[in-house]
Amino acid sequence: MYYVGGISESVEQDVIHSYTMGYGGGGFAISYPLAAELVRVLDGCINRYASFYGSDQKIGGCMSEIGVPITRELGFHQLDIRGNPYGLLAAHPLAPLVSLHHLDYVQPLFPGTNRIDSVKILVKAYRSDPSRALQHSFCYDLKRNWSISVSWGYTIQLYPSLVTAKDLATPLQTFLTWRSWSQDPFTFNTRVLSLDPCKRPVTYFFDGVTKVGDGGTMTSYMRPPQPRKKCGNGKYRPALSVQMFNVSAPILDPNVWKKAPRRQCCEVINGGDRAGVVRMKIRGCSRWESVTPP
Image (cartoon, rainbow, N blue to C red; front, side, top):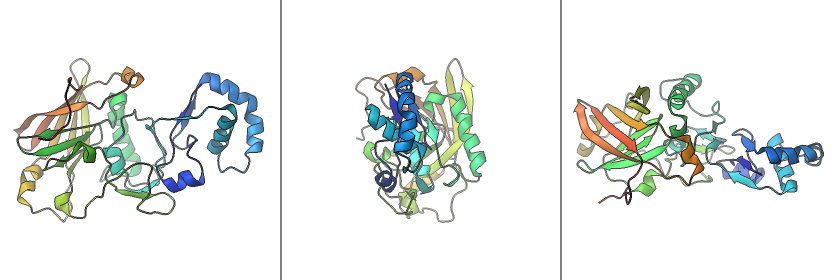
């Protein structure tokens, strides 16, 4: 019997409500045998836990009576955050994207769009390869000492330096906590987003997707209009000359999630076959391959 879901991203919400229930906004799933057990005690549970805040907390109480703990699935997103969700989605955990709640309380996912249109853009990518949506890959261009982070179907971050895998896998904190609008704490690690433009990555956003061959896609990512404050550091100039990324990838087999998954690898195919365009490839990692800077 399985009770699958996610908890709140904001610790203050988990302290108030629960660390051991599936939050209803992000959604939860109950296996059929467990649902059959739940039906037997549900009416009584609703009465016994009438003081609980929501139906998800009541169901959590029922699960305690049945004795089935929550199986946390990192693809259920309650999105109990305020501000810009970019940092969280740009470093998505190694899990299939299942849900995104509270999209009406955060900034649009893409710059220059409203909330509804930004979701439509993400859904366009999702429909072309559901298992790969938001999957995180990163690699190095050692010829130019670049680090490139890809959140498939959403964004690319280009760092004109070699950044450790640990940092690349940690979300930039572009958001605040849900209840108190504070800097922390969250149920995952974050890293500071510097105010210095020379310490920020150059960012690109999903622009389109096409089918390639038999079972592949090509996604493009464009650099949006840049903020008024730009980096004047010379080592940033080559990175700033890149206007677009084209990323090829095979359709990700959904059966991969039935196994213990591994983050896929990526590589730069060329540094720019035409002005301002870099082409990349995402693929399964080879044996003994790791993202290790020299």
